[in-house]
Length: 223
Image 1: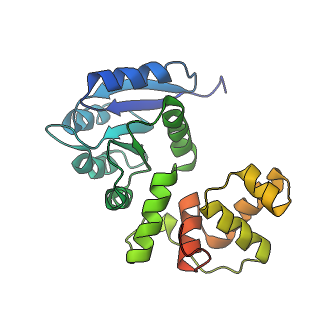
Image 2 (image 1 turned 180 degrees about the vertical axis):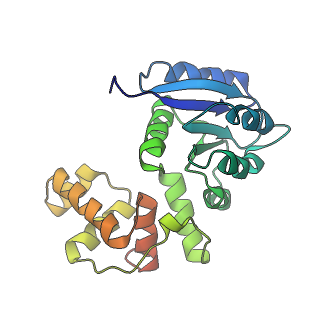
C-alpha cells in the first residue's frame, strides 16, 4: 500500500467547519489525501481545470453554483473523477436524479467519518458506493418507471440457479457476506465467489446492477 499514491480528494462545501471536520478525520488515513477545498461549485470547477482529483465530496446546497448544477460540469471536465454527493436530506427522487447525472454515491452529512472514508475508497476502486439510502431510492425508482440509468448499471437476462437466486435476494435485503454465509450454510469466501459470478452472469459491475437485475426479474418484489 505504501507504494501507491493516496486517493486525491477535494471537499466542496460552503460550511468551513464541516470541511475542516472531514479533512481532519481523513488526515489520519494514509491512503487518502485532501488536496483542495472549495466553497461553491464555480470555485470547484476552476480548481479541477488545473489539478487532478480522484474523488470529490460535493455538497448539494451551496451558494453561487449548487451541487446539482455542478455535477454534470464535473463529468464534462473530468469524466473519470468520482463524485460523492453530500446532503442533509434523504430524498429518493433526488438520489435517483443525481445518480442519473453521474453521481457515484450519496451520503447524508450526518454520516460518520468511517462511512465517508469507506465511500471514498469504494468509489475510487469500484466506481459506486451503495448504502441503504441509494439502494432504496433505486428500488423505488425502478418500481415506478423505466429509468434512464448509466449503461453499466443496466440489467441483462441471465439464467440463475437456486443458490444464486437466494444469495441475490439476501443481498437485496442488505445482509452482510457473513450473514448470507450463515443463512445458506456456505463459507463467506464461497458467497463472495458466487456474488462475483452473479455480476458476470448479469453483466453488472456493481451492487446496484445486481439489485436492478433482481427487481426487473421479480426476484425481489420489495425491500
